[in-house]
Length: 224
Image 1 (cartoon, rainbow, N blue to C red):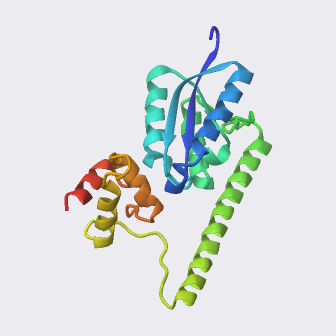
Image 2 (cartoon, rainbow, N blue to C red; image 1 turned 180 degrees about the vertical axis):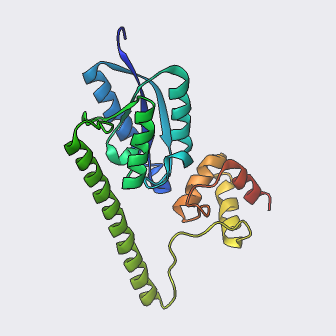
């Protein structure tokens, strides 16, 4: 595409359960539509899978890789589906905007909202309000899930836990990992280590920081 403005695309899914859904494809389609309408060319895509929107940007591998690309090749435009994909918490959102602005990078959404615009006080205020509302909605959802677990515990007569913490000595975790690693009796094929990690995530097994297991951690589990 001649005379096109180069841009990078950033995608994020917030939980392991979304990895096999259409979240990534939806985000890619939105960015592609925006690129077509505005005549920009997406020259790189960066993705953080199962990363909370409240997580600091410096802890996100995809975001960090994108910053490295920005600092090495001069691209000064990043496109996201919407503000919530960039960050949900006000703190993470504002920090991300500051990091980009300091590098002279614009962050725009697929609906043409410029998240890095700082010359318009109204836009800055609205960005903060939207971020605060997203943070509130997430906290409200967490509260509802906690209430639901408490009710389920009362009905079952025992505690129903939420997310399971990472403990590689947990017999149930090891057993589930090995079960998922077995070959399918129908196809004779076995899951990849990455897919095993995603399946364990759906069962509630995550690391102590709430992330999916790495390939190395899965290999260790399967060695027991």
